[in-house]
Length: 437
Image: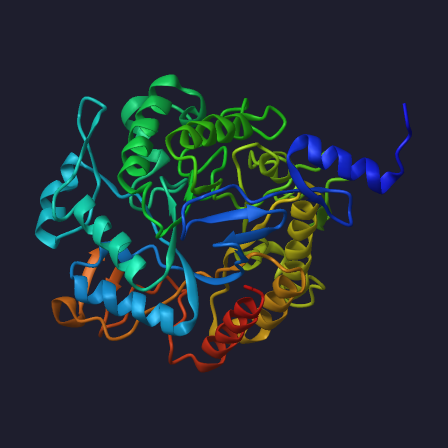
């Protein structure tokens, strides 16, 4: 047998495995999967759209399908397009209980699932249900914006894991959502509906399994759920494999916050004289970012970043903890993890509350994301001015409201009149556009 030199051996392996090239790190880069025109695919750590690299600035606006007029949906998507947004992440779920139905009908609340006393749910195909999401998809295509759609929420807002467990396994822990066969079947039934309804649309960027899956949420977790036992990883694989059977072309991702599981030398910090193992790295959340990203039908990685709320005990006068520096480190760690796996990654959510803090910390964060060539940068969250439904004032649900024409502000929203941040993100959009060729 003739011995091959290193470069030739790599090329031979690439040919035998259907790999188009091997990058400088020795990692495989598969040829982009053949997809219909207008669909996004991947090649190595890049997104690919119609044969060209696709790097993007994106937006989060969970409230868009909750708007009651097509005019305001159009107004918002046009505003996003003019701002440089290429990808929008918005909720593909909203579930209510039977006791909420009368109020929902009175306020014209968008909802897709109505939970029944017998522990089942009915789907709402009407004008205040999936027909509203139909228009969001149609309008997104009109304004050349692609959608990331999560199927449910780890948190109780607008329904989610909490409702599945409370209705189908009363008294159960949060992680039953990931293991109980009846709950999984009910979730998959909803996923099948959504995927089959929109799988032919080029407006879809990716299907997202759940927003911010953790072992615990509004409900506690059992001791059996952690990254050590692989509960979430097994569930991610099960659901992504199902979706790939339903839809061979659109991308699939987890929607996770990017928690690592580093059992050796787990980072931590001293607090009141006690060493605290860091939740973002010790596996207690349930995610294992490195292992989850390597799953065969997870096409790219997501991570979120809220150090201000994650480390409140360290943000005290005289503390040497730097929110800005921690964020830069978190960004670089995910870029390196994605590079090792050979898949794209996006900074899918990040925010701080005060405008002064946004101005102080965002420039370093977005520059770190750009320097590490991340596929997408998506702040939480985009705000729209000039909405006109209900005279520009409407209570949607909870404390979410349109006030004087401004879309809901959860304390993290930025608007066009916040010039420094608005301009910063338009710079990000321009840089990402320059890489999309």
